Image (cartoon, rainbow, N blue to C red; front, side, top):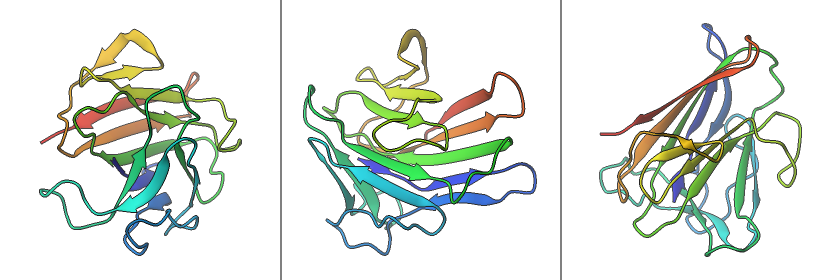
Length: 176
């Protein structure tokens, strides 16, 4: 289950380039492609992407997005959120609230360049939320960090600086 309140900010004079929330869509429906800022696209693959009521009694009464996927191998189940337009080189921030139920395998959050499609785009940063309740970066087991609790929401914060070469990303888990 994944609540996506995506907020990307550019530079010191922050500008919202993506804000996806699902409070106006009915529970059980696919998310609307047009969001308050930016868009989302889904590919159900072997699972589903649907608006859901909050799974966490401690969280606000906002709708979440539930991404359900069967055991591998199967076609991927994907929700792709995209900025309102290409904003070029800059500093960006991303906040994603996540809820991963007990018994769920690895869950992936992948950042991609602006160009591309839901079915084909190289990843810029790939985070796997592992069954051991830590996070693996870009499929490298040596690059694991943090811890999260299942059955409770937590926030992933990613700061990206594309003004340097190579681009730099700082990832934090904000847990209560």
